[in-house]
View (cartoon, one colour):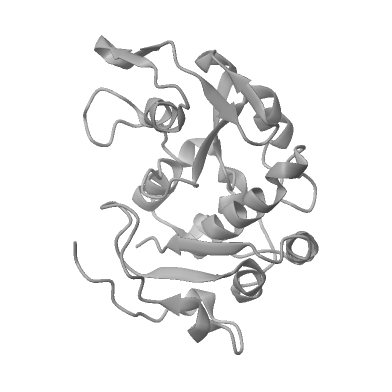
Length: 226
């Protein structure tokens, strides 16, 4: 595994905060999670996010090609997440058909053995990503974002009900219903925004600051996307 190198991440610059956020980690948590990382208390990571007005002009979900089979093993992104997040592993047969297994939806602390009742949620929804900077990406980068298996918090298996209630809302208008999930959701959201150099708007920033006050020990530890 290559040694991680200290780099400057201009998209994260915030007065007095950028340099403490960037670090050379002792080693990434997996072979996929290579490259520079951000490791910081969540409150500092929030303050380092760029702040900008959002615009949904031109957004179409189809601009984010997703549920691809990136490694050509017969399982698409949805199936890969289900296999990875299963608390009881499912059987995987020809054509990547899953049977059996058990999952835990952390948004609502619900357990299920029915994979069809789960959605794979883009932690930061595709429309929100578009609003926050992805509108300026090329199609390939949007595809990488929509199928991000390189950091395990980018995509999560959750109950379809909660995913659809969340829809494309940001933390200023929707939050996880399970109190026990609040600090995890906060660090996941900030982690994805940090990883992909996405901005926040003023209402979102206010909401994140308020949530961070209840999570004084929460930390962001995320590899930066290319």
